[in-house]
Image 1 (cartoon, rainbow, N blue to C red):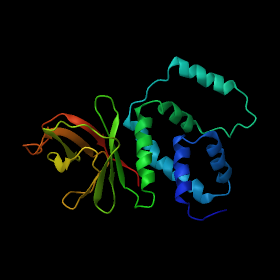
Image 2: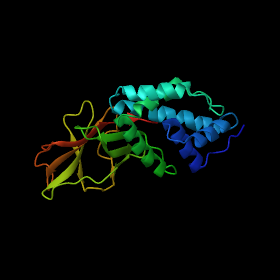
Image 3: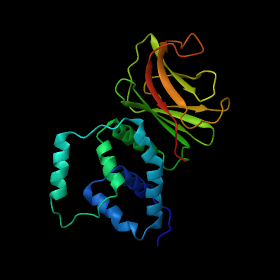
Length: 232
C-alpha cells in the first residue's frame, strides 16, 4: 500500500470529498484509490476530524418537504454505476449543507486549501454576522504564537467608523483589543503578550469610532462573532 506523501492537489480533493463538494466522477476517483492508498485514507480521516466539529457553528435547519421528496426519488432511482453507499454522517452532512454551516465550511475550506503548504493551524474560528449567521472572516491561530484574520468578502464600513478586533477567553477580566481592521484586509498578529488560545475562546469584530473604542472594551454593535475550535 502507498505510504507516499500526498500532493497538494490530492489533499485538496480529500477535503472536498469529506465536504461532499466533489462531482460524481471525482468522488468515484477518490473511492477507487482508498483501498490502496493509505496516505489518502489518513488524510480523509484527518479532514473529518478537523471539519466535522465545525458543523455546530450554525444551527441545523429542517429540510423542506420538497427536498425530502427529491431525496425519496433519488433513493428509489436505480443506478448501475452507483458508488458505494456513503456513511450515515455523510448524509447528515448533506442535509446540514443546506444551512449556514455549509457556507461557513466552504469558505473555511478555501482558506485552508490556500495554505496547504503552510504550517497547520491549531485553532480555527469562523466569524459570522449575528443577524443572519453569514460568515465574514476566518481566524487561524498557529502553534507559532501567531494569529491571522482573513476576510471572506468585502465588508462596507462608514467613513467615520472602524472595525475593531477583540478576543476574550474564559477567566479573563475582560476583552482584549487585537487592533483595528481595514475592510478586506488580512492581518497577522503575534500573540506574545497574550495567553495561548483556548477552546471556545471568543473573537469578535465591532463597529467603533474611526480611531477605535474610547474605552478598554467594545462600545459599538457586533459585526462578526465566533468561538475557537481546536483542529490540531
